[in-house]
Image 1 (spheres, helix red, strand yellow):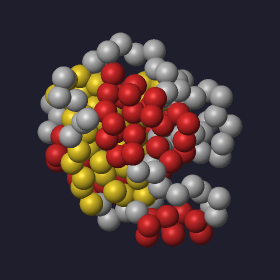
Image 2 (tube, rainbow, N blue to C red):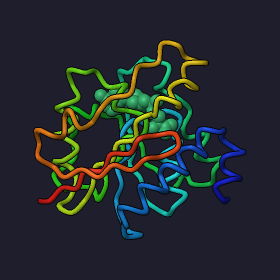
Image 3 (tube, rainbow, N blue to C red):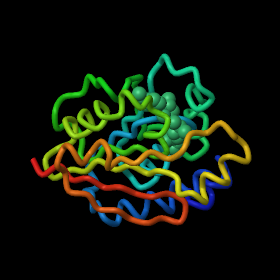
Image 4 (cartoon, protein in one colour):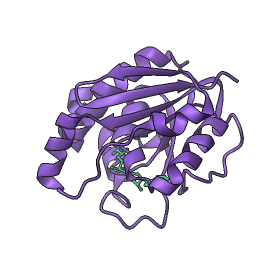
Length: 192
Ligand SMILES: C[S@@+](CC[C@H](N)C(=O)[O-])C[C@H]1O[C@@H](n2cnc3c(N)ncnc32)[C@H](O)[C@@H]1O
């Protein structure tokens, strides 16, 4: 299935993931064999986008998360998109992950950091850098003010965007920012 067909099958958020995800993948230049960690499964849109681009994806969220954004039927969406076999799910809290050091080529947070407790965000960023390979990248996608206005129509309680630089700057990692139409994209390379 192509991007438009998947969008029609699983909903409009997929198109946003695809357009903003494409901007990040253009910068990352990942090998086809890259292992990607998708933090914060939600409806599975971003994991499905990555899988639609041919990557093997591990995705997860805390099993204890009872918010409206967790515990969704992402598997149903992945089957509709025809990419279920490329996505593996494992419950985890990104502030304390069981994955080995340098296990992934890229660690992605699509619309996730602002949903993580403020008190945990510094640990989440340290963990993301620990599990990404030297030369690999940690990527955050956070909603632009215009995107937030759209989100608030359906969910007035949705939190403000987070600024990953607040947590990443103390870790002395180089940052590249890419301006999307819907998301601000923050890319941090693990220099090793
Ligand atoms: C709005 S959803 C993300 C949308 C999803 N990326 C997509 O593409 O459909 C927010 C996600 O953040 C996850 N989350 C919140 N706190 C987390 C944590 N400490 N560790 C990992 N994921 C977390 C939630 O469980 C939920 O899956």
